Image 1: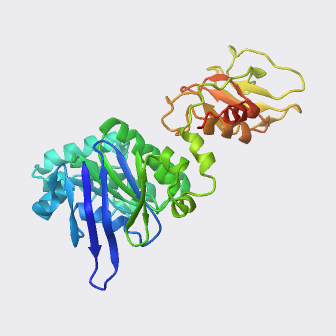
Image 2: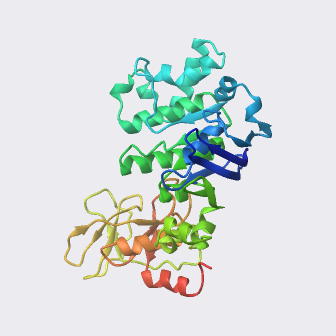
Length: 365
């Protein structure tokens, strides 16, 4: 647990970096600090590992004032991931990851063994002997996360770690972090300027104003539903109502039967044939997974987004929600969405009017 108790920071030139910041990052959760440039996000983060010393107030880690801990000792017990990975260019991947265990007192052999275990956990074993210059930006960030995890610290500080990669890789890295967090249950303090990333990753989100003042601290659903003032409302965005649907369960949503048939382009002998001439038809492969739409003209079309009916698909942050259902219906060329279970098998169809009817009945209140 990380506690900020009336933390203030005034720099030598008089600039106010933080003003009486008080909040608690709870154990085993991802707490996200978000806000515009100059709001003190990174300053807040760095007070935890004493890279920045506050001028007032105190920061406590598991009940202990960090000011009472020797900085090198403190930092060895905290994982730290930054925007540009910060890998040592003269060390191979496995040696980069082994750095913290060595500093913690393990022998090089023991440190490399731990590094290999962490690389396997994050799916990077094949890159162990590569140099940082041989890695893509996304791979470097994954190695940076692995290095932070190698020390087995309960607390992880992440300072805009995914902002320097392209949007596709960024989503992949977010998925990876959520998967690892589900397994490891670290206490993570995460800094970003992207409200979508904050809402997707955070168990609780702190919105900071310029000048380091806390505007609102709440779970993502509450932040979207009830911004405390115009600043928070404007920062969260005008489409906050739609994004909030990602936190609203669609368990009451009725799935409809869609015309289906076996996909002639694949091995699908067991797929049921419920095709209706002249209508949009879902093509199913041999494992009952949708592969494409067959249009009334006989042409194949992309499925659009699929609605995952439960949370078994870890890569779908909208699984089982009205946002996932509505997105599937609106992105489909057929004007109705395709629903699948967590394993990707066909479950039925989604009519946009049915989703809107749930909204009309006050499901999101």
